[in-house]
Length: 146
Image (cartoon, rainbow, N blue to C red; front, side, top):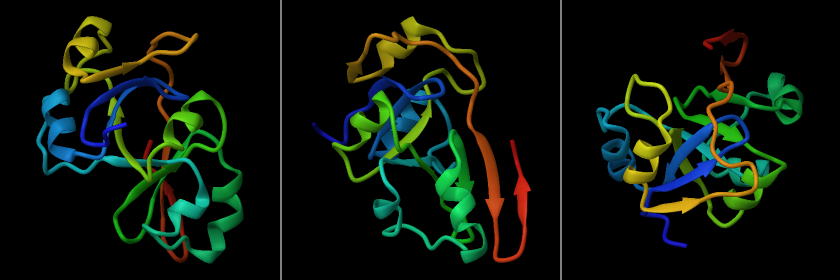
């Protein structure tokens, strides 16, 4: 699998574009390439390469499901530890992830299929579900952003 291509996949929350190439992902999405993307990983072991989790929140972060965490080093990371999307992510060290729709618009499957280089569809098909919650954590406090 080529990590520079844009993949259309059903994540555990919603249909999404995934790639290790930020510019290709921004072009598919139609948004500013300087805007940061969240990173999707398949394990907490891989997460250690990108950020340090504040000790106070380690247990909570390990046990959370469908949550994106924004860390003090300004990286937004989401670990998917089970399900179909987890098996997809295991093939890569990490993937930048965003919803599979035009910037600021609702999900349109025809648009998503047109913009993706590779379409990976499983038995669930593609659907727009509830997005993950987002929390920013620091050494002392946690703030819910979404």
